[in-house]
Length: 159
Image (cartoon, rainbow, N blue to C red):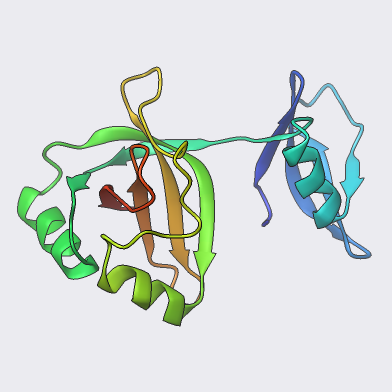
């Protein structure tokens, strides 16, 4: 979790403002409210699992290719199309991998991944794609994954 990440609870939206003595400080986005929330990272995870707190998703546009074998193939596809075929996307889950883990993932995008569940992926109400953002912790390189109900990255895009 990092600064500016947003969470919803009921009708209120909170943003991570920073840390205080090992806890995470959530401040309300609405300027009318001045009540902050302070939780440990474990407590936030528990609230998310219990459905009391929801991570706000982010959206944008990206080119998705079907069954791309590796990161090099995805880069070639992205360069050749030059923004044609972009569709909207909504990030519903974020996964951060070490450089070694990311390189292993990127070398064979058709492999099942333990962090992909069958309910990940699909379409959102706006006609866009629901996806997972996979980030290389060391380089910041990001790949978007839409599994369409499978456990491997069936559709992938560069972000």
